[in-house]
Length: 230
Image 1 (tube, one colour):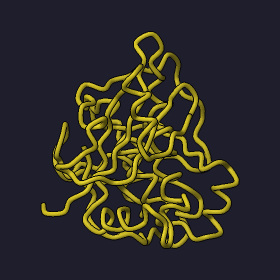
Image 2 (cartoon, helix red, strand yellow; image 1 turned 180 degrees about the horizontal axis):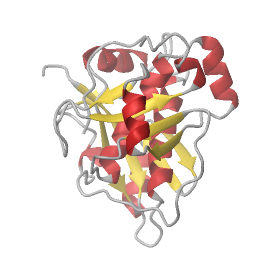
Image 3 (spheres, helix red, strand yellow; image 1 turned 90 degrees about the vertical axis):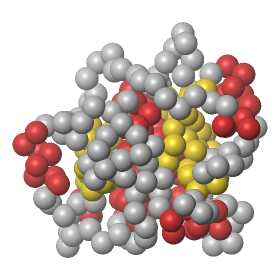
Image 4 (cartoon, one colour; image 1 turned 60 degrees about the vertical axis):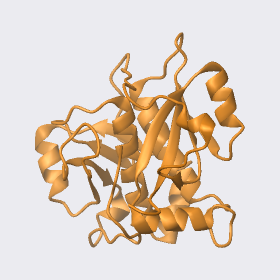
């Protein structure tokens, strides 16, 4: 697609100390929200045009991994680093699909997998519920969590956004149970439907975003364009 852009997310995975899977998913969601709320993305900010053109075509995200010197080079590029628990993720402004910065394009994208050493804690006020029936690598699930966080942000008015900011833009990522998933997908809450570029079938429902203010009156997205993820 001519002019297509993607949002690069880079997760730090050191051999001796990889992050917990849930921490990485929550860091990806936090990174997306932080970018969307950054002054450089808003109004006439330096990233605003790139973000708007990316959103107009679709909100495709690609997760890559880095360690050591790779990670240090990533930190020299424009972007924002966030930390959630054991995970560090850096988000960069959107780039053309076929023209990544060299220090990002050389990073590996496939095979990013992580595990949790213990079950995650309870859900929070904002929870991104993952489809229990899908097998996704950590990298794929991070992109989906980022999509769900973005849909939730689009569906939040300024009062809700400020309340979310006051909580540090925190969002839990949890796997739904089968009965809960069926109820969630029929609830009118924002649902991520995958474009099918990698790992899973096109149209698969991957994550549902849940927050009290999204339940009142149904979800009405403010953004445009289909979801595309990797």
